[in-house]
Image (cartoon, rainbow, N blue to C red):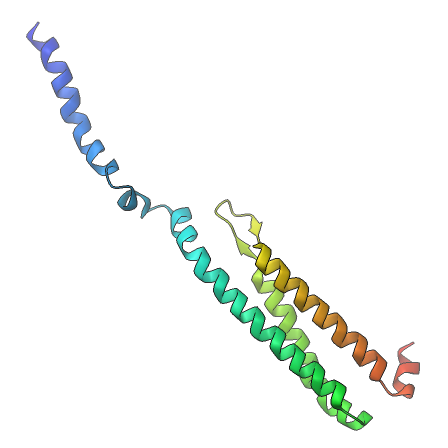
Length: 142
């Protein structure tokens, strides 16, 4: 009979260490990768937004340079820089996609908006480039 009275006490003593570890949720969550990723996500998103904004600015500046070029020679001289700017834009867009906690691709609405803005800028640059080509180049492109 005495052992029956000791059973609840023994169980309580065995569970005491478990209860102590669960008391501090912050300490408990430290070893969960998804919790760590969730804390880092806002910083990464703002870093990506800043990178995208800088790339859009660079693309606009390059577009303005191309539009100011008066002669085919000036445009030809800017062509390699123009292509590099567009390549960098594509790299930036490809690098924007992040992984969520489940490992699936995820993108914030702000990132999607920036990506759309970058794509529109790139399309505008390509269209203006085609419009500004000299007639001999335009004929050979068709």
